[in-house]
Length: 224
Length: 134
Figure 1 (cartoon, rainbow over the protein chains, first blue to last red):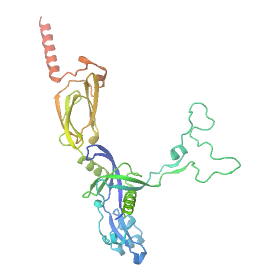
Figure 2: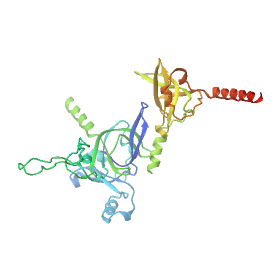
Figure 3: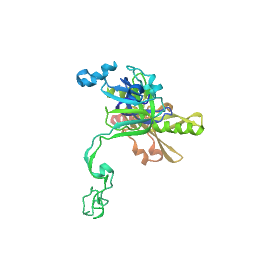
């Protein structure tokens, strides 16, 4: 299996095996369940669909309810597909609960979340511009302005992707190579070292680290 | 849900054998030191000059003067890395945080123990009673 859907509970600090205090984000992965499968015969690719978060029938659309009923799975609020190999997919049946023990202590994971919304922001917050270096010497433009944004008649336009004020936040962000500090299968909790994008109660996706997987692939290829 | 899960995680990290002591007390902290794959216990002895609250993040600061140099160490109260904390004397102090000790040297930098303070008070009242009688 290639990952879990979870809910960011919040942050705290715990002592690791060496006895050092480390900052961790607590992720709740209870109610993760296989709600559907993709097969090469039918869909031309192989994947497992996971559902997360209990929900009442009246809060889902009829199409969504129909999907869960047809597959014979319980209703779930959030649904996400994980691409896996056919052999791996064979180990999962619709209705199976997927537990936190998918991950082991010390493993590196990538965590995807949606950052907090900050609204329309200026360049200093949005792009970490420095702003005016002299706050007291009567700078002719305002202290937090971006400054020049282009050249003259050539090219006579502002280049695309120029860093300017605008909407900031609510972006999907993946943080790579975060260590799993502890796994609590019984309570369905993952303790992940460091910070994760998004506010508390936000939905996050935890996957095994892609860089670790690639490194192992390279190693295997070289030793051949 | 949110609070309870966090509290559960934090509660797992708390030490159950936390020694009770106050600022001003002299303590000996038996700190486990790892050297290679060997582990030994190193004691750090001094006066507690600060206790910080904060559930699983609570810390305390121990100050001692070593070869004329003031040394302070901050220990997490719930750290699994100390073996035990011995309370040597109970201090008689009027502050919660004893940062004024940093500016003091020699005899002035001592913290009076509670027994000494009691004896001093008893002696003082004895003298006062005598003076009144005469």
